[in-house]
Length: 214
Image (tube, rainbow, N blue to C red):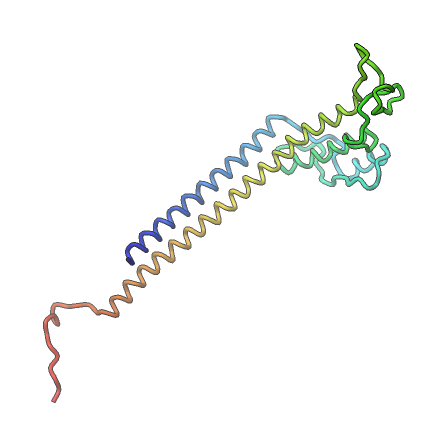
């Protein structure tokens, strides 16, 4: 039974080490893929993508003070990591709010009007071919921003998942190594205890009998 436990311990150690190494390799590959994909897009932060410049732009556009502005400085920097991609997406949202006067997509009027304010009443909207009301063009700004920001945020999420995989892999690897040390150490200690308990039979004392002392 003891031998079975020793074999089971060795198998568990091997599995932990293999899974740990595999998780580390997959995490490194995933992180590298995110970086390579972002580099292919050749995105660079615009000159206003720093705390001072975006605050000045937001004030000029009349955005409410309640809108939280980004603080990361990525002006002129290549967007080649998940974190920078997320920062770029936050700046894009401020740009979209500047274009809409601080109004988010859900609150924008559906149709365009002559005064540029828009309306939800199709009878008051500008009409196009066939007499159909014209869609509010400002809403297209938000649609484009949302699509690009979603892709950038997905890069941020993918990078963090890859980092989590690396951390889990290291934990599994260390656990496997530690478990292996315990298994090997316990196995050796068990053999030493058995030798001390039962003794070792030697040729010179084999078959001898104790002689009583008078």
